[in-house]
Length: 116
Length: 222
Image 1 (cartoon, rainbow over the protein chains, first blue to last red):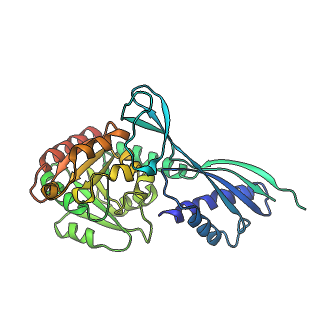
Image 2: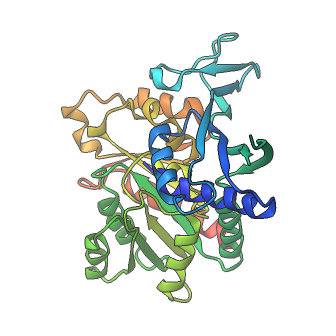
Image 3: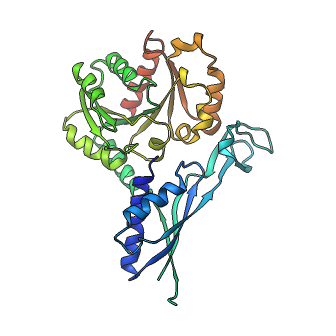
C-alpha cells in the first residue's frame, strides 16, 4: 500500500549513486525485500518508472528478491523458516515452542545496481 | 556495446526514517513528552477509545492528540469539540505517518508543557507497522468484530506493538471471537506484548488501562 514513499526513497538512493559514479544509464536495480512487507513488485516498478522518467534511471528494471521470514525459537533458539501467508500458528519444529522472534523478513534493502 | 558495471549500494531504504525516529525519541525523552502511537484498522474504535482514555485521565496528564487521516479532519474536530488539544495531519494519500511528519506535527501543535502526545495513526494494519514514528509506546487496537485471526494475517503489526487492546468486548457475546486464542496468537511473535480487554461502551477495562498508561508516562517523563 505504501509503494509510493518507498519507491521515492529507492530513487533518491539510486540517483545519489548515479551522481557519485557519473553513471549515464541505470539498467537494473537489485533489491531485497522481506516477506513481511506487503509491497507489490508490479506497483513498485510502476511507480518507479513514473518517478524516474526524466532521470538516468528512467529505464531501470527493478529486480526484487524476497527474503523469507525466519523465526528464532524463544526456547531452544532453533531457527526456522515460516510461510507467513499460510495463516498457521507459529511453532518450533524442534521443540514445539510457540513463541519466537523474527530474525529476517522485514528487510527493505538496495543491494546493488547495474549501470552504464 | 557499452559495458555494464555493478555498483554496490548496500543501503537500507527505511534507515533514514529509523534514524530520524530515534532522534525524535531521544529528544522527546529529554523534553519529557511521552509519545504514544495508536494504530488499528478503520472502525476499530481509535477515536472513541482515545476520548474515553482522555476523560479518565482528566487533569492527571496534559495530553495532546495528533490525528492522521488521508484526507479529512473529522476526528480532530471531535476531540477539539471536547476541549482537547488536537491537530489534524492530512497525509495527502499516504497510508501511514513517518517520523518526519510527526516531528512537523509536534511543531505545529506548539503547546508547551504537554506530558503526553497521542498519534492516531492512519487506519490500517499494514503500513503504519513498517514506519517508526519516534513513539515511546506503540499501541494497537484489535476490535472483536474484526476476528481473532488478525495476528496471523498482520504479523508485523503485532510484532512492533508494545500493547494490544482487545476492544469492543461488549460484542463478545455475539461473536465467535476467542480471547484466549487472540492472546496466544499475539504473544507467539511478541511474548512481551501487554494486553488489555476494553469496552469503551460499558467502560470495562478503561480504568486499568488508563492507570497503566499514566504510570508508563510518568516512568518515561522522570
